[in-house]
Length: 84
Image 1 (cartoon, rainbow, N blue to C red):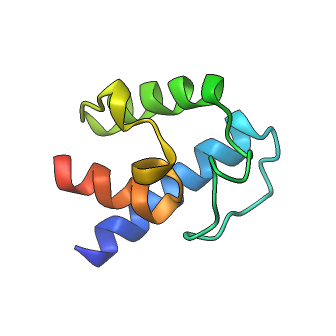
Image 2: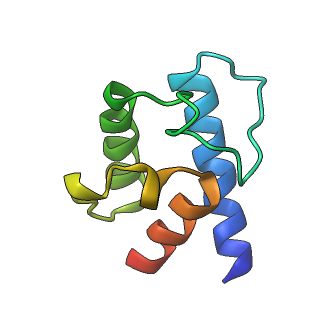
């Protein structure tokens, strides 16, 4: 399972850096704050949600798009992994 989470973290990292931050060479740490730090804003959350749903085939509820469940790559990867 840990390999799956690492693979998810890598895919999410690449998407966020390339498409949301527009910094494709940047790498985020798995525990770096995304929402609470302001790195990912509310508009970008929808793009991220759509990416996750179409790429990984999981459904995320709008109520889950918050810093409690969605603030780090590690949290997000575990959430996606639990839904697969």
